[in-house]
Image 1 (cartoon, helix red, strand yellow):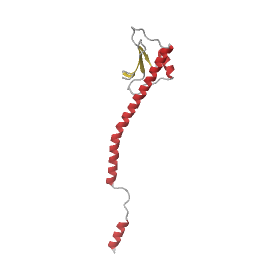
Image 2 (tube, rainbow, N blue to C red):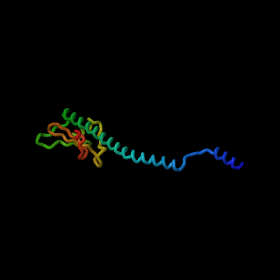
Image 3 (cartoon, rainbow, N blue to C red):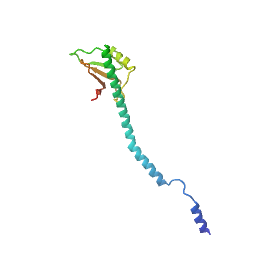
Image 4 (cartoon, rainbow, N blue to C red):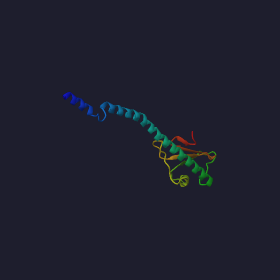
Length: 139
């Protein structure tokens, strides 16, 4: 009778929860997925910052071209070095560009650089840089 009671008791006892092995396996799978996914998010963030800087550089180039067309910026003489404008600077050229941009964008993808620099040649070619990195025209 006692054996019968123990068999019935074991049959009625239901397994609840997960075993330790099952939990360790699930945690290991989550860790593997995290190791694969986290570096990809980091590069996606850097790519987004770079694309933002490129878009800002295009807007700056368009604003400089518009300021040249309106006569707010005078092209340099043929023998002179290119005109250099620092976006956010205090000279008249920087102010004319900032007014067209309705603000002063700052580079996000280049460390240690706080302003875009624009070089304008005597032929009106516009190059936008963040530090030494050319953003417009696309390299």
